Image 1 (tube, helix red, strand yellow):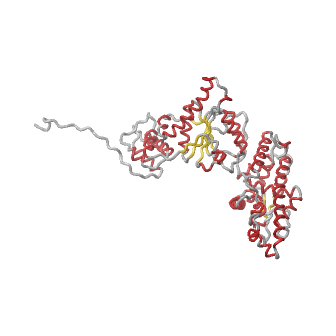
Image 2: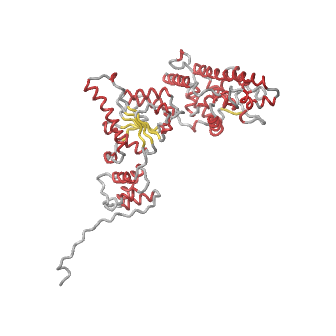
Image 3: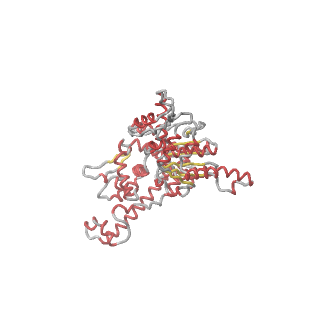
Length: 510
C-alpha cells in the first residue's frame, strides 16, 4: 500500500492504481511459476502426449508444485494484511466524500470477493495491453487469442481451494447479478467449453469504473440501464444529526423479575457477575482514587449463543434493569451493508450501556462485509466504556476463532425443560389477570414450546378470554389458542375439591 495513501484515496484512479498493482503481482507470480514448470516439463517430455499428461506424471517425478489447477493459487494468508489496509483506505476515502467506483458497485450489489476481483481482471485490459499479453501467456496461445481473461483463469488465480472453486463457479453462473444482467458477459464460441469463455465488461460498466470521479447517480443510471436497480436495496440517506436511525430502544417487561426467575441459575449468575463488574469499576475508582490507566478497560463483550432470541432479549433486559439503563438493540440481518459504517457512528454517539446486536455472525464470520479494522476499532471503543455489548449468534462455529478469543463471556441458551416451562406459563400472564384454578400447568408444560411461543400463546389467550367477557382466563382459552396454531392436544383440567357437609344424626329423621 503506497505511503501517500495513508489517509484514503484521493480519487478513483488512485484506488485503481493500487488494485492493478496487486493484480500485477498476482499475474507475475503465476507467470513465473508457469515458466518454471514449462522448463521442467520440456526437459522430460518427449511428445505432445507427455505434455498433455504432465499434470499426472510430474507429481511422480518431482515434489515441487501441485497437480491440476492448484499451481496458480496463492497462500490463504498472503493478502490478509494487504486487504485490511486496502479496506481502511476505502473507508477513509468514503469519510472524505470520495466515491470509488468498484467498491461502491460491490456494496450496492453485495458482490463476493471473487466477483469483485473478477471484475478487476476483466477491467485491466481496458487500462493497459500488458494485461492482455499476460492473459494470453497464462491461458496458452493455442487455447485463446482473446485479450480477455477466461472463466478458467479467474477461477485458477482467485480460488485457494477446491471448495472455493466450486462455490465461486456456482455463485457466478447460478445467480450472479453481474451475468444475469450482462454487466459482465461470458463469450464462449460454438465449440468452446464454459471454462474457456472470455469475460467481457459492458461498455457502460467500463466507463463507470474508469471515471476519475464516479458519482452515485452514474452508478444508479448504470444499474437502471441493465435492469438491476430494482433488485437491490437503495442506500438510505439520513441526517448526521438524526438520533437512533438504526438502533431501537426496547421496553423492559413489566413482569421482568418473574420472567428472570425462569432462566437457569448458571445464566443468572453470569449476568449478575457482568453487572457487578461494570458497576464495581466506577465504585473502585471512587473508593480508592484510582485512575482509569491503572485498571483494565471496564467494557465487557459477551456472546449469546442459541436459537432462542426471546431468551437472549430477556438476558439483555435483566442487565439493563440491573444497571438502570435503557436497552438498545439492532438486528444486522435488517441492515444494508452500506449502512454499517453509519451504524457504528450512531453506536459511538449514543454510547449505550447495554447493547444487543442480533445476527452478529454477519460481522463476526470469516466472510464478513465489515472490515476487520473497523470491527477492531468498534470493540476497542466499547471496551473503554463502562458498558456491556452482547453479540447474538445461533452457532459458536459461525464466529471466527480470532473473535472468539476476545470474548469476555459466553452464554449458551438451550430449550427450556418441562419444569422451566411451568414457570414460564405461570409468569406469562400479568399479575392483574385472574387465572382459573383448573388450568393444568404440568399438562401444558409437556408441549415442547419455546419461551417466545409460550409468551405469545398467553397474550392470545387473554384476547379470547376478554372477547367472551370471561372473568378469568381458563384452560379452554389456552387450548383454543393452541389449536389456532395447530397444537391440537388434550390437556385435562385439574379438578378442584369441593367441600362436602357431613350429615348429622338428626338429619333425615322425622
